[in-house]
Length: 303
Image (cartoon, rainbow, N blue to C red; front, side, top):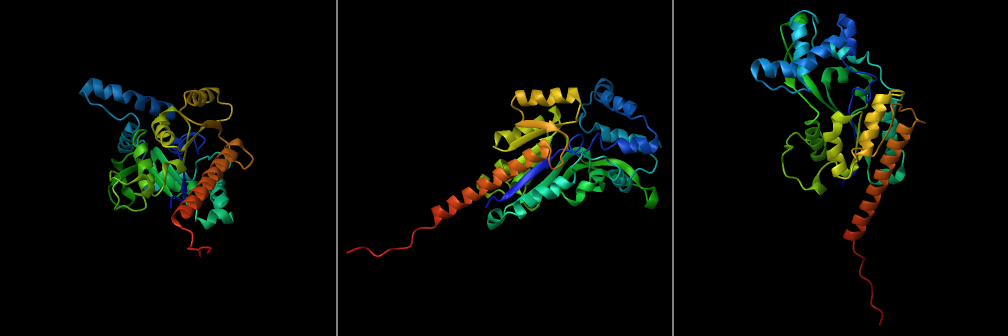
């Protein structure tokens, strides 16, 4: 039975007010603007100097490794990255919204009759350890992010290689992994052919929430398969507002709201309403399925 509703989140500027790497720059006294300017120049630099293409979404990881090797981020390892997660400024209502939206179905007897539940996932081009160190970790059911390999011994261990990456296109792979259940059942290859009705989380039971144009591939997958899409923008940020309005006008998202998830906010009410809508549909579909499969008992014929 398709009884799982998945809410899939971007991280930076969606759950977090700003970027997850900001506390790193503050800790080490590195100019964030200059760092990101250097990162932005790398694709052209490597193409011009070596004829090599790079992934614009994840090349920043190389720069973190380079700065660590040069001593600008001394001692930066995965354990240290995790501590920076505790310093993030989450938007109002996060992480409380995660638990409150789970309770929507947990506290409803009709929904529980069909064992409906809500799961939250984070799919981000950011660093997994930072997400794991944040307040959301106790509430989410899974994380996709970028992992870094360390070298050295003991306290001298530092990040030195890229392990696993998520970019804005491969976010769609994470969505398919949720859809097919590969994250819960690793023996299921994401490329395996599985009928939609047999998949763990149907696309039409997914809600994807992010902040902008870089998430268009993920928005498109969810929209094309009957799910719901929602964009967030920081209060008072006119440029961000224009971006999400353009997404709505072009049919990329269903709607958008300010980055406030408190219980009376538009964001909270829209997400909650969509979960209830999905849960009601799941109930009706299951009732129809039962009615279809259960035949009337034989009756005596009137003579």
